[in-house]
Image 1: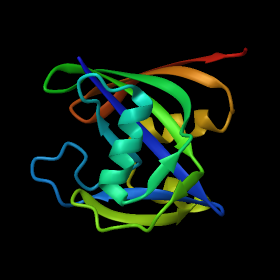
Image 2 (image 1 turned 90 degrees about the vertical axis):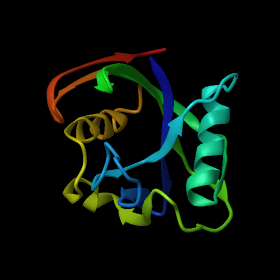
Image 3 (image 1 turned 45 degrees about the vertical axis):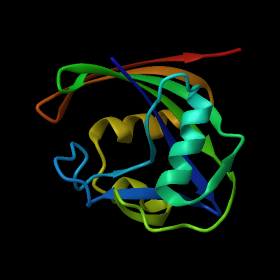
Amino acid sequence: MKNSTMCYIKKNGKTLMLHRTKKENDIHEGKWIGLGGKMEEGETPEECIIREVKEESGLKLNNPKLRAILTFPKFKDDEDWYVFLFTGEDFEGDIIESNEGDLKWVDDSEIFSLNLWDGDKLFLKWLEDNRFFSGKLVYEKGMLIYDDVVFYDY
């Protein structure tokens, strides 16, 4: 089981997206995704996403908002992945060159025209509901074969 984080950083009607083009043997090669990565031993999800955003973009993320927990059964190397999904609007610093791909501020109206994972298209829409949710996305050979979501009201 792998624990990881992902964040969609927003500013002025745009979202910072990462076009994965630079890593070898990258399961995300050619896809546009949010920033994030695997949790290190002893890290909280918040500590992880702040570190990952800094490493990948140079930005210091303040007050990330936990919006969802996503489950990806047997996503890579037959391992289950659990992703703590964040959004963020409070950040400082300047964007650096990422060693994982190309960073770009994309107009929110153009996000769904990018080469996204099919599951990402779903949870990005689920985020619009503004409620915390738990989602399950099952892929087989890179194809989404099942999805489910539970929204929570508090």
